Structure formats: C-alpha cells, structure tokens
Image (cartoon, rainbow, N blue to C red; front, side, top):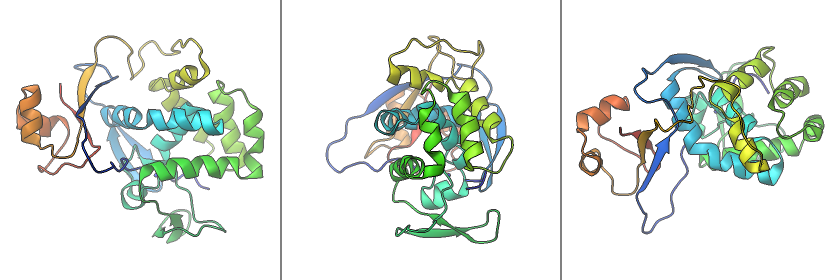
Length: 260
C-alpha cells in the first residue's frame, strides 16, 4: 500500500424516491479554500467539497465502525486523502476510495494506474459502498493490521500512527495528514456518536463548524433537474451552477448540491 490511493456515490434502488434535504456542516458565507491532495493522482479540491464528501459518507463510516471496529474518523480521513475527496482519478474511474491494489486473491475487476510503478493493478468496484466495505475487510483480514484493533476506538492519533507503522502507506507524513483532516473537519464526532460519548472539538475554528450557521444542501434524486431544484429552493440556475462548479446541466443521482 502506498500513500497514493480513492468513491463514487451509492447507487439508488429503482422505485419511488423521496426528496431529501440535509444541512451541510460547514461555515456559512466563508470563501472556499483550495488545497491539493496527493494520492494516486494530484487533486485540487475545496473545503466545501471535502465537507460534502464527509456528509455523503459519514453514515457508512459509522456503520463500518460498528461492524468492523475501525474508527469512523479514520475511515473518513483515509477516504478523503486516498480518493482526493472523491475527485481523484481512481475514485472516478474505479470507485476505489482507499487506493487498494489488486494483491493476491482479488478476483474482481481491475484497472491500471501509475503509482509507485507504472501501470500498477488496482481494484475496481461497482460503487463507492463496495470500496468502503472492502477497506474494512482489508484491514480486518490481514495480520499486519491486527495490533490496531487493540487500540481505543476513540484514539484516532494512535490509529493514524498505527496504520503507517503497519505499512498501509510509505509517506512519513501519512499520520499527520490523517490527523489534520480529522481535526479540521471534526471527524472524531462520529466516533463519539458510535461510542455514545460526549464530543468536544479540539479545534475552536474547525472547518465543520457545529453552530446553527449551516448551509442548505440537496441530494439529487431521480427526475431532478437544475431547473426543478432551483424552483424548489427559489434560487437561480446560474447560482446553483456557480456554487457547485458545474459547467453543464448534467446531474447524477446521489450528487450533493450546495443550495443556500
């Protein structure tokens, strides 16, 4: 496993789908801040995009924490880093959010991608949820990661350092990067929720600000168009496109749009 690694939104079952509105926990009226994520590809994202990524995958991360014992904060931080917040090449082309290579015993689909070596073999999934599950199975099914599971589930710093020590990544700054995402985006709150603990942010001015200043987001459902969404929330189509960096009118089911 290298430092460079990748999700795509979950597929929706056919049938009647209810429109969902959610509140995205990032500061209102703040100017998006760009940063570069180096994984299997070099990806430029904004804090808004990372916040949306967290919103999209926090539930599956908490579910995996309950089932497999991996802290949700660690799962989300690795997902952000390895997939470029879902915008990296492997995330887009293969739904691979964790940069997991083929390895012996993998019988699923594969893609070739330059990493430490040219055209290495990476696992390909039908949807991001499969990647999240495979990440959990990858950690729980290999003896070199066994020591991680004796660590406290609310000690994300030890988990971050343990992953590096066990060989998940070669980057010496890998733990530092995971911890940075966890603290800047308050990801440990999801560990606390699973464990039934009271959560206190370590960062006063965290990117995911848990005040009442939430922006409204909309998850695209079957039949949605930019026009119908604009009418629903009384906003202009052009404003929706600008706020979400859209160059065209094409939407995909499960896509999360910043509305207000």
